[in-house]
Image (cartoon, rainbow, N blue to C red; front, side):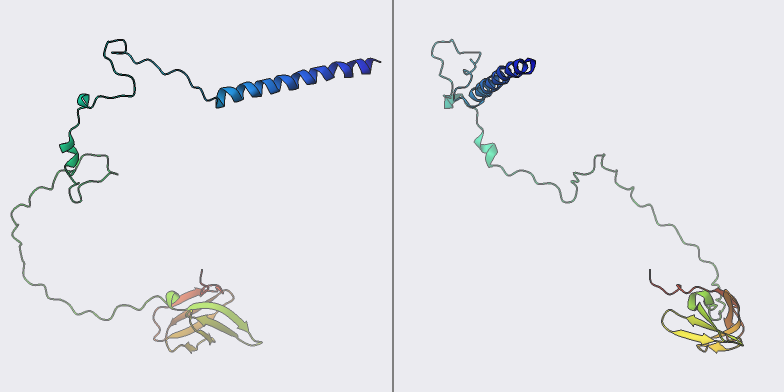
Length: 194
């Protein structure tokens, strides 16, 4: 019996809440979408004066219009001087150039003829990219990132480079004339484009 009483007591409360919600929605609807608005505000000044005009009517004689100023063309910006993104004063113009300075010329210097420039380092021209070990010797794989060349100890590759010695992780290479000896590290990815 106690449960029946509490169930009956909650039912009128839910109906009252529903009725209150409907009344609230109706009130808000009527306030927001009603056709009437607040009465117009009374303007101060000559509202109570005799002969005053009704609001909304304007006497054209009271208006001060300068039609001539509307027909003038506005002044355009000067060529290249306006920069809306610069918020600093304009820099002063540079000072006028002074008188030319006399140049002092000394005796002519004889130019010494120079030989050809030194050759480029071998490491920029050729890369050591691999080793093939046969039973009795090592064959090195070299590349200029276009072509691949093979060479054994003491051989000349590409007509320019001599392989001095091939080790486990590097190769010693020099120019065919014996200059520019360089140790090239083993790098199989040296010519891969990144």
